[in-house]
Amino acid sequence: MNPAPKLDVSGLRGWYGQAQILFDIALQVGQGEVVALLGRNGAGKSTTFRAIAGLLERRAGRVIFEGHDLSARPTYEVVRHGLAFVPEDRRIFSDLTVEENLAVGRQKPRAGVPVWTPDRLYTLFPNLGAMKNRAGGAMSGGEQQMLTIARSLMGNPSLVLLDEPSEGLAPKIVEDMARAILQLKREGLSILLSEQNLHFARLISDRAIIIERGQVMLEGTIAEIDSNPKTSEAYLAM
Image (cartoon, rainbow, N blue to C red; front, side, top):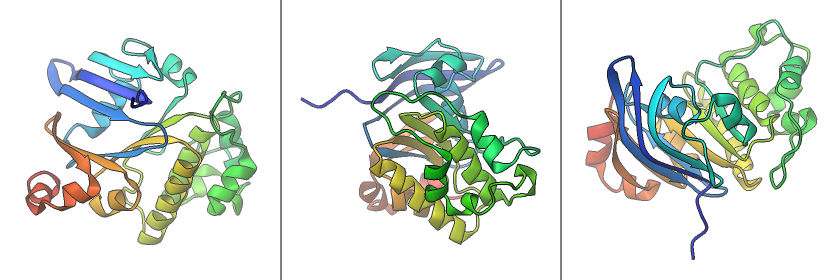
């Protein structure tokens, strides 16, 4: 018997005002699994994450996380259950240092999931360890992205939503980000990430889900997605 998924989303719909953006999105993420939500800019990836995290004012459908129905729960309750959301716009506190940003994200240890401390995070992200006292606003975009992820991990989540983690990053930083995500997977963390970069998704993902215009178009392993070149042209080409 297969274990229940860590995250089980079904019939997810979402609106901005009167405009419906999501149409019955269904997806699952298992324990320690990395799943990539792929699609072009505007396909509905970020809106899907906002709906799961409770940040979308109008939404419908079911969001089951570790057996808890979070479909209508506010964001602070979603976070308390151990689901973290890392947005693509790197919302750090620019006037606070790296250490101070991490302190803001600290929560109590959570049973059954890794406990993160600043020292552990500096090992995961060596760049941050070299600039503990640097203000967030004086960091590069890639460093800010790492800090945003690290601050979310200070909440000791069991699943992280990563929205476009490789967006706008230099190739070397992308490699560092991939290495860190794979280490998080080895720690047992479940990850759902949105991406336009198929190469990055190949490096880290177990499965991929392609969405277009707010609908799931295709789902499978990265190898299965790669085996059909028409897929990339139809749904991922810019």
